[in-house]
Image (cartoon, rainbow over all chains, first blue to last red; front, side, top):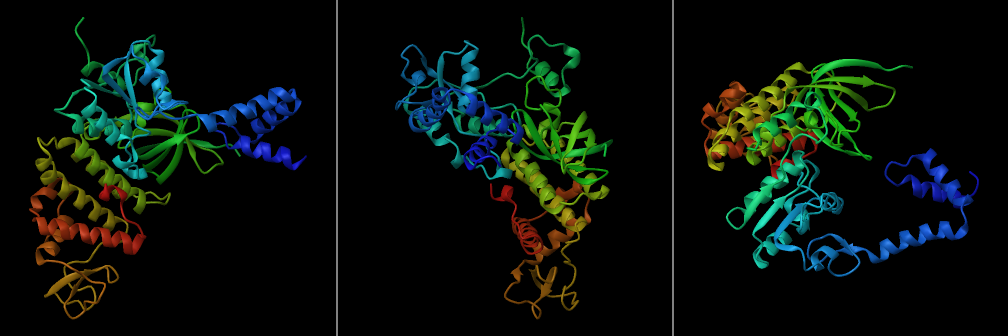
Length: 196
Length: 250
């Protein structure tokens, strides 16, 4: 509309999640108004992550080296592995400061309706790690939805007898009121209650 | 033009992520048949909708129909979560086969109360069967899955005719199934597209069609009859709909 370069920038920004045409226009004009070095720093940051960031050879987390910082960290408990669907889930678990073991990123969850089968995920790599590395416990931290639960059930079946397999508990969010809990979550919280 | 809100029973057939925290739902509703809807914020842990709108869930929904193609979920009451079926791998697989068959065969926004009731009954029966082993699960659930799929073919107008030759009407000497003819054929009418079926297989399909879903197991299908029923279902899907169920090959 104004120039092909701006149109192209708007089109590229619109491809980002949660960004519509109006937001893309606002971002594009913000970048035009910003000092040149500030705008180019953004372009350079995008280029850097695309060129440098890759998957950890061991766990599938994002890293700039062959192994990620968690796999390299000698203070981590190497007998326990937490299995997550995506690297962003790993960051959520890390934020709890409750877990000091290693991770394994599957790269998704099983979904036969969408054509996602076991061979599309890093399941063989997980089984290989369990076999090789003296792992004693695998914590299944896939999402508590149908695909995540199906993946957890599949992995539990494959790992049974080789290692202790645990699943993240389901229950009530801390700070919430019981009256607002949905019946499925509250039911899970009841069936998974523990003695105090 | 302002949209309008209505209430209906629905089963969640499928859901996939949309944007930051939303999901698009494929629903089969009692009042309008197949409907697509957005459930906003459903993936956030504070959402009260999330657990209620998982695939297999039978719910009562408040849907808002605006000007777009997708409707918006504004309220959910759970009728039956079917979590027992969802948490058992074999039952979940059978349930997904049923959901995919619904997704493929009932694509229009057109009410079909019998299809809806068949779906909810199928899910109830999945919940009721709690087999001790995979072998027991196969024995109990494979006939149920086949029976449900045959009934869906019937309800969508593709019922295979198996009691006489679909070409010449002969009542004896049926040797196979012709998707083109829409049913069993005799030796004289068979052609290169005919799939050979055992008498056991044709009898099994007829028995499954005659019985209610809850009695599918009592049809007493042999291994060959089970295989033949599956061949008939798959070839009907391929010939009439141009698809194969992904979940059956999983």
